[in-house]
Image (tube, rainbow, N blue to C red):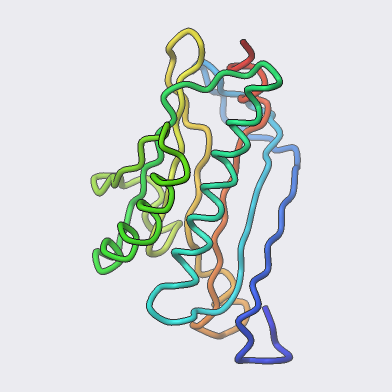
Amino acid sequence: LQQNDPRSTKRIRLCASQRLVRPQRFDAPGTFQHFRLFGLCSAGRGEGSFRFETDVLAEQIGFYLQLFAKSRQLGYRIEDKRVSLTAWDPQRLGPLQANVVATLEGAHPDTEVAFDQARQSGNGYYDSVGFQIHGRDPAGLDYLLVDGGFTSWTQQLMSNRKERLLISGLGTERLAACFKD
């Protein structure tokens, strides 16, 4: 993303809110055929030792957890928040434990943070690491709130394997419809 300086380690953070339409019908509670998505992306160049990846992963997940905590002031209750990390590249488990899990557990002690190495959904769409955030509504129903992970899109676009891109999304209408106290 920084063509002018191929050695730049400047990080780019973007967000967007947009309406999505899915052609398939869903019958599960809290699923919508048309919905608004709030998305985050963090892009930059690999900095060595998986540092960029662990930094932006902890940052994005931390953002969502802070958003859920602040939403309580507006009457939204998200109980039993759980973050699951999946490392499709097993070499990433150590840095993820040391730099993401430990950071999130320290900053958000009310949230369970764990690995889900059995997860297969997202494998192939996401590269080395994916994550999900789940929570329970006031009635006790469990919902997937956030899905995200690293993609190779910027590597392909820039023809540079040093490029990194973390994307994630939150269905804001699900949050509004299912978690209002």
